Image (cartoon, rainbow, N blue to C red; front, side, top):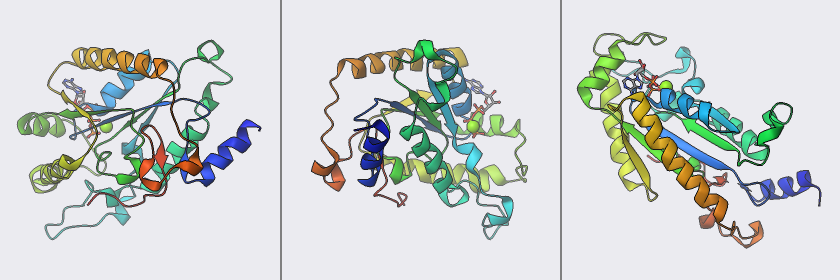
Length: 244
Ligand SMILES: Nc1ncnc2c1ncn2[C@@H]1O[C@H](COP(=O)(O)OP(=O)(O)OP(=O)(O)O)[C@@H](O)[C@H]1O
Ligand SMILES: [Mg+2]
């Protein structure tokens, strides 16, 4: 059967399967200003066949963001993000992970394509639950987070009181929700230097990738799976509701 037809068959089942091509999907979540984007970019420089998707790129326009009773725009919630659009970009990559490399990087064609998804609300979003091959979560203490955030200029800029009135309380709420996560989340101390964080995660990834290369992929055919059986590293399109 031609490759494209096999993919269509897999997609019809509601699950993008890696039966045909192995992929490795990394999640980098964590607190605002924890260093997610920095770490993802540093890793991308050293990993072959690696694409980064940033949740930061999927915020709705300001006109569509809710405001609370204090007048604070509610940016730090899933509803402020165009998650359908982000899922569509992810599924495009899953469907054709080597696409962008075909003309530029023949030498690395044998490497497993790697996708890094980084953002502050990844592990609270149920449709992504089954996609992760490895998940990291960057934390920094309140004072350091507030300090780093005050050095940044967001669009729109944070108004006075925004960090304590919206950003930090939402982070604590999301952390509580994440306590129910059933898979292994590797917590990273975001106060370590950029270089230390890079080395720690890079070494861990090399180890995990080697394990994946050695493991015979034991995916059952799509038609034999129940909805609850989406294996790790695949995208479950049958589940559409965020964890609340
Ligand atoms: N390991 C680190 N140690 C100290 N500062 C860092 C470290 N990593 C990143 N930073 C700095 O912290 C700030 C936030 O970094 P970055 O944009 O990577 O974080 P983020 O988690 O993606 O933030 P956001 O919530 O805006 O998406 C930047 O000023 C960056 O230079
Ligand atoms: Mg960022």
